[in-house]
Structure formats: structure tokens, C-alpha cells
Image (cartoon, rainbow, N blue to C red; front, side, top):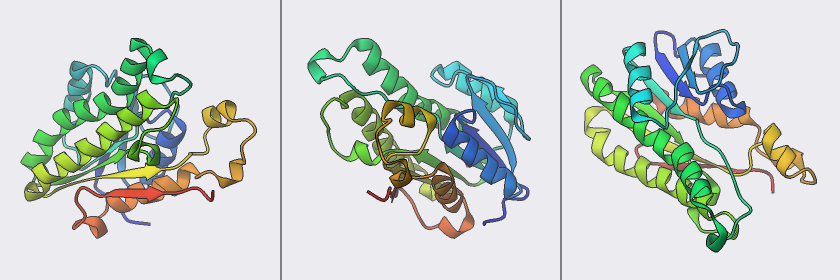
Length: 222
């Protein structure tokens, strides 16, 4: 496990299943972890409440933290069930806000400070499903595709400043909401959140200093 002693790491969505796994992994690796989420959770590190869909909310949350070495953009979600012709504005906006706008707002808030500090790491969570369209998943796959393109664009813009930006493309993650949505699936074939956390820590480590704009697949067994 990489050593993050002396590093300040911000994890968005830190109250969710994947966010918890990522934040716990950074904490175990010695990082000074600050979680951000719209809901509360008890942890061995602070989790500050913030509405990251609101640019002002993201900005004030980052301003209250100070210097940030690593940003792990874990906040996000999944919704399906509607065809394009029946997708409501609410569903479209929900997916775009939760998955893409949170990444945009946090990047706008964090990048100036990382530039001033001479570098940093940003790790986003995309999705294997965001690589192509799929029936009844239009809003979700579109929002994750935006995350992929934001990652690549940020990487090109920031690599000269010593800031690495990369993303992870998980297949189905083994979370309680996914189990509830797909109760007949083979859960053993899904990706454990801890496996994704290990990849996040790698991309945030010095070992990944030459990786920019990558989309790393983390696949299930099926």
C-alpha cells in the first residue's frame, strides 16, 4: 500500500459505499482525510456536509479545507429504466448533476490551489458503461461519458503543472443499492469497493506520476 503520510486527501461522496472504502483506504495509508458528502456518516476522520452540485457549495467546502494534495471524486450514482423518449428532465438533470457536475465543480474549486502548490492528483470515477450507449441507460451513460471527457481535458490542461488527472472505469460495483436493484444477479462476480479503492490509491501515488488522462478499467468476473 502506498504511504500517504503528510498528504491531505479529499474524498467526495465519502458517506456512500465506494466513498467509504476509498476514504478508509487513504486513512489506513496515513493520509489526512477529509470527506465531503451531502449526508452524514460517523468515521475516524471528518466528513463535512456540502452540496457539490452547487458551485458555491463546492467552493466553500474546498476553501474551508485549505491545501489539498489529492482529490478523489467518488460522488456519483446510477439510474436506469427509461428509454430516451421517456427520459424525464428530472432524471437527465439528476444524472448529469450527480455524476458530471460534481466533478466539474470540484475541479474548478481545487485546481487553482494545486497549481499554487506545484502539483496534485485528481482521480475521477467513470464507468465501463460510459464507453458506449445502452438501452434504458441513456442519462447514466451520457453523464459518465462526460466524466471521461472531463478527465482527458483536465489532464491535457494540467499535466504541465504537475497535476495528474485520471479516471477509473468500474463494471458493476458490489453495493447495497445495486444488490437491491438486481437481486437475482451473481454478486460474487461484481467488483468489491475495496478493489476500486486500491486503484484509486495507486493513481494518487507517486508511482502514477507519469500517467495522465488514463481511463483504467476495473472489471467484474463476468
